[in-house]
Length: 378
Ligand code: NAD
Ligand code: ZN
Image (cartoon, rainbow, N blue to C red):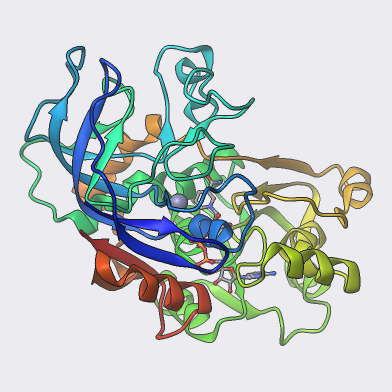
């Protein structure tokens, strides 16, 4: 089968590799119909994770049709349409039973964290979903069975595999409530969906920050938020604090490590300039109000050294973060899409055959060709 493989920093190749087969009694094999590229994949191709073998299959936002099931699978059967969440979760451990599926105790044999498709040996070593077929472990818990009467196309529901529940978790976990002022750092796919959910949770003011012109325009036009280019405002953090009269109730960082730099460049720039690798988190620390919440959705996956802990402590800021636990949110969010309370499709700018994955990575990474979100079609 064809699959997108990691070949070293900034180098992905579509290769012919053996198709997966059933290994455990609860496994499911899914024939992928659509599979998206995520900002988290960009961290991988920038070399954020040390444990990325050459030829490792990446990708964690797929959906498709069940091709085969192991003998103990009762939740789905051949022919069913399923969405595969990026969390790989057993459904039985304390974390899975307490809405923290991203910290499943049983799925990651390699460390004290959860497991994710296509996200290195550190996070379980499972092959990813940018491929024609995917092995999904824990078939009685992990996959979401799309209701058989669903007439929606893949495009409407595919992002339930990650960024819709991730964005929702960001506003839920940070406690956004009616009347709040919310600052969302980043207007990539995750930031744009987070802005929508901030409104839906009743925020009275939503402010978005980025430096890519077409993404700021999209945020303003489609999400009706106030937008600021942080490269064009001197002391942007202080400025945001001023216009929000002391800072936002909640700041949600949907950036993480700077998407454009390799880890080596990040460490170098962090040493050189205030910000650098820490750009978004420093900005967030500056524009959250005293007693407010700074929520990290963007991934910080490597060493960094300018963390403003003293400032956050002095100002009683609550800091929350993590890999989003998404599985328990999917049914309710599916309903919101089905009843048209929520529509994620405006962020889709590219749908291309999987053979052209390298081009998809290039435009998404370099923010070229007005790219916001890329879907690969096996
Ligand atoms: P993306 O790269 O498309 O978007 C990031 C955006 O942030 C870009 O538009 C970029 O221009 C902007 N940006 C860069 N530096 C900034 C700064 N200092 N201030 C404001 N904006 C800045 O990626 P995405 O797909 O939207 O993903 C965003 C982040 O969310 C990534 O770090 C990704 O790994 C993370 N993520 C986390 C989870 C989770 O479970 N926590 C799940 C999915 C994605
Ligand atoms: Zn993702």
